[in-house]
Amino acid sequence: MIAIRLSAFLLLAAIATAQQAASPSSASGIPDPKLPVTNESACPGKGHIVPNWKITHSSPMYSTWQEDRTQTATLEPGEEVTVVAGLQVIRQPDRILVMQPIPDLHLKPGDIMLRFNRLGEGAADIWASGTWHNNYDASFTTEENGLGCRRHCLGRVIEEGVREYWVQVKSSSGQTGWVLNFKATRGELWDSSNFDDLCPEPTSD
Image (cartoon, rainbow, N blue to C red; front, top):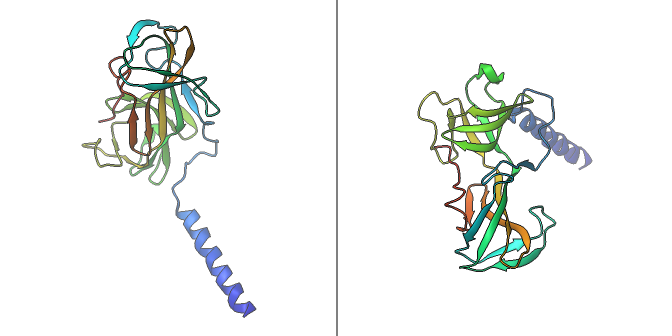
């Protein structure tokens, strides 16, 4: 009985080792960026004040954008606020599996590229081979839903990340706080609909 259990254990260990060896990984031994990654230049931009912005949907206001936040107020439809700043928060980046060699990024098939800030029309801030590549043309990427790349498709999204857009506002009562404007979680989208005209969500199509 002991021999049978030992054999089963060794078999499971061998399978686990093989699966780990087959898992796609980065060619670089440099640790990935510490999460979350934030972008203070996100719409409307740090220091770009937008007065008299009208709230159209009830929305909670928080003490901070960080996970230990507490709700401090509720913004009601029709209320006017002053937009103070915007912040993009990448809690998990998109993971892109490289399908063909990408020489300028030093990537080969099976490597993983991380996509952080999406800038529209396929451009993005990416992490590849242990290096940041800002505003990089990643239009060669096929999205998880099959959209995106139309030719010279060098990689595909195998896991969508978690990204949030926060807006810092000052309420009509003079209270300053943070409002979650948009959140994408593994492809599931949530939108407060309060700041779409001010800060539209970039797409990679």
